[in-house]
Length: 153
Image (tube, rainbow, N blue to C red; front, side, top):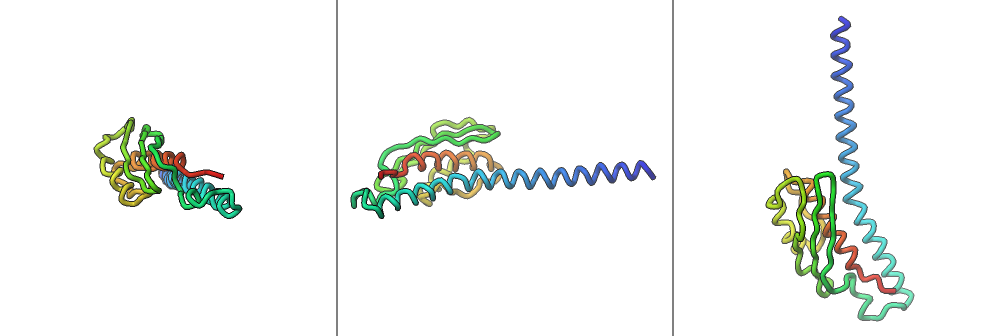
């Protein structure tokens, strides 16, 4: 009877550990996705304040991003991705993966730059089987967009 009890204890302990780990990973992923979005919102509020107090010219006040090519980096425990994002007149006109050092193949996410162009956002649909690569790509694009923000004031 005692051997059965030990097996149940081990089985239940393992189940609890698995549920805890899954919750932790889900929370960790959600935090890393939401953090850049909060930074953009903060920068937009700063820009709006400058516009409202009259310290920004009419030409600058309507621009969210500066024109140019900006680089961004994204990384996680499976590797890193660097991208270049080109912006012209507040429109993302080009996105290229400039360095790919992930555990998986780059071919898994080859379509994501076109999705950024279509969405005009760093937010892309997760590629099944390439979740970490997708996340690093999104983070890299968001990093480039954060650098491109028009923070005149």
